[in-house]
Amino acid sequence: MNFWYSALCLLFLHFSVNAFEEFTRERLARLREEVREMFQHSYEGYLRHAYPLDELRPLTCDGIDTWGSYSLTLIDALDTLAVMGNNSEFRRVAELIVTSHSDMDLNINVSVFETNIRVVGGLLSAHLMLDRGGAPLPPGWPCNGPLLALAVDVADRILPAFDTPTGMPYGTVNLRYGVPPGETPITCTAGVGTFIVEFGTLSRLTGDSLYERVALRALYALWERQSTLGLFGNHINVLTGKWTALDAGIGAGVDSYYEYLVKGSQLLQRPELAAMFEEGRRAVDKHVRRDDWHMWVSMSRGQVTIPVFQSLEAFWPGLLSLVGDDSAAMGTLHNYFQVWKQFGFTPEFYNIPHGEPSDGREGYPLRPELVESLVYLYRSTRNPTLLRMGEHLLHSIQHSARTRCGYATVKNVRTHALDNRMESFFLAETTKYLYLLFDPDNFLHNPGSSAVEVDTPRGPCVLHAGGYVFNTEAHPMDPAALACCSGPRLDDILQEITDDPRHRRFKLFGGRPVRPRPPPVTTAVCRRPTLQELIAELASPRRLSDAARADSEQRCLRHLEIMRDPAAERSYERLRCDRPPFEDRLLVLNEVFTS
Image (cartoon, rainbow, N blue to C red; front, side, top):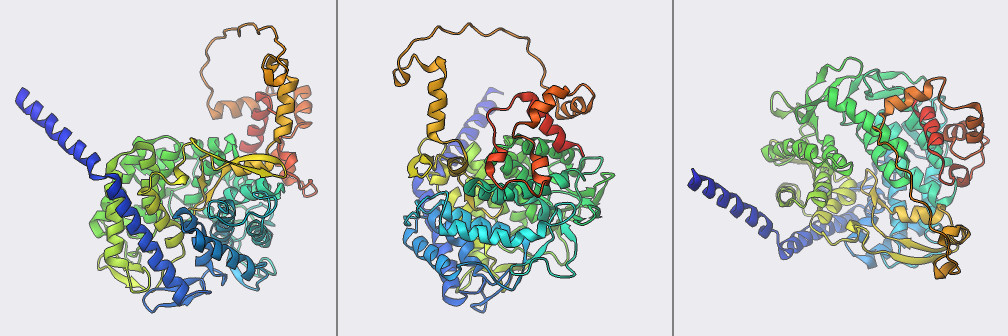
């Protein structure tokens, strides 16, 4: 017995050590350079054969306009150049975009969702990386600059889509004339709830709260229309607020709604969004999750309606890692990777009971979601198995999708036949996440151990201190830049510190000693109430006194009232306040979670 136990231990130790020794820094560097060459091959193919059209057609080596006729791939790929350290090309393309797109006054109909995540997100991320890319910094950067101005112009042109009774946006808008006549009011859930990262960044950088208020209103409108099970359907009428597709899940049409609750809360420090995600996730775990799969179910009854895995769902393990649940994330990731190994790729729809792709949805358009989850989980766990998975993904794409001028969509994962399209997200997301997986020292992985100080009109700012939040198109936003442009000025902070007598004992503030404060009174430890209990208590007659509510109304936390008031001053100052009392935050939660 002892012999076999010792043998098993040695065998486990052997494979564990080998697993860690496999991925030396030299091997990681080789994989990283292989990804760089993959990006460069497809990027140069786009420039040579497709620019200034939106996308490359990699089989015929020509171009096509798809999402808007604004050189989409160039904008979407710009920050990837900075991430990979190609500073000279980053500077050239940033200047090219500014000079060739003074504004977006184009008579074209575009997807509100895609324009936001790819164009607004890409411009904002590139703007925040100007210094990393070695580009000249405009006066007032990061709170000012031509790329930021262009992002504002695009956002202003899609804002008319939000002019609905519910605050939820139409799916299509004309960049010159607004919502097209006769436009359908039916929009998918993700098309309503995927704006807070980009619009919140715009508001914090420019000081104009309009964008953040608009995005929050759309999020809250969805939240108010969840089913009694806490689930959300797939499509909704933005004029009436009635659901038109009642299947609930975490895949296509819903996915980034959940994603932006987490990322919006982290980027903008909005705890109510994190609470909304936790509530939503509990409903997903109870009704949508089956073992480590996630099905589509009826939003009102919870029974399975479509037993499929969609490749877009592969973002979910990474999202779970972001909220600290690596164990659940690894279980789900294992299932998804087994599908990849079965076919060499993940099909758009995979029929779970039959173990095969769904007819008509057998393709793989070079999606990034699976490698995105690998990046987040590896950063959290350092499990080398995740690197092996990433290497497998990389070599599958190299083997089957490469063409003489780029990389092509896999039309059928069974046969590996190719289709004549290379979506811009291949350069914006797939190659970027693969590169980051094999580049553990990249500045985007900064855990907070380094930062850069820049002088701005608001005073010195600390940037690139880590904590980057990626939008759903893998465009990273620097939360330090948002704080730089919208937070309190350094002089204000120093003044507040020097006015506090507790700090006078320090030489910096005069060196005058003060009596030490008495020790805090020990109080009983209480159980943290659930969100439902807080809401129920707030809804009861005992929630807040009239005097407390009147005092609260004089402060700056009434987000919904400000947002619903069309005459509200367009200034970010209206959304900030100094350390609100806890009871005031609860009042806001009541406004958010009850109609």
